[in-house]
Length: 174
Ligand code: FEO
Image 1: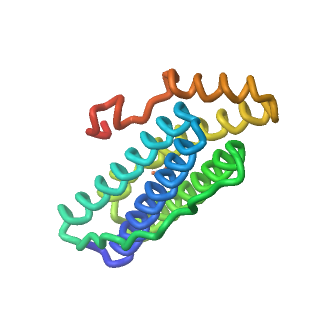
Image 2: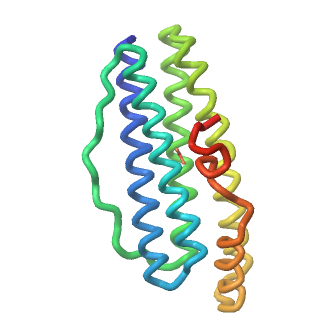
């Protein structure tokens, strides 16, 4: 496997793993705050990121490279507020998108069209994840400090049709 592509893929493995940890930290914090809908949503999102990482690990190994399993970095234990959690989540997803775009660029530079094709799944996934995070941030901004509104928001997230692709596709990522 091309060295630059392998390195870019391993960097992405690290990013997906740290996304999973970050969202797990958020989910646990939300659970402690009694925000059951939000925590359920974030636990599921954390699982999804782990799946993104695994998909890359398997691809690198199948293509003759060596997948590097990154060490775990502790996420924050506390967050300022619910709006802050989703603001951080959106910012994080924007950085992941940047990193995926860089991966696409490296694939094209190195003429690795197989990896380029594989990465298209992540390009689409990022579009969805960014849109979802933006919708949630917009909703929360509309609610502001209204406690009843936040209660309904949390309940909506619990009953939401917004589900992770892990749930929707049975974990195949198809
Ligand atoms: Fe796998 Fe949300 O980036």
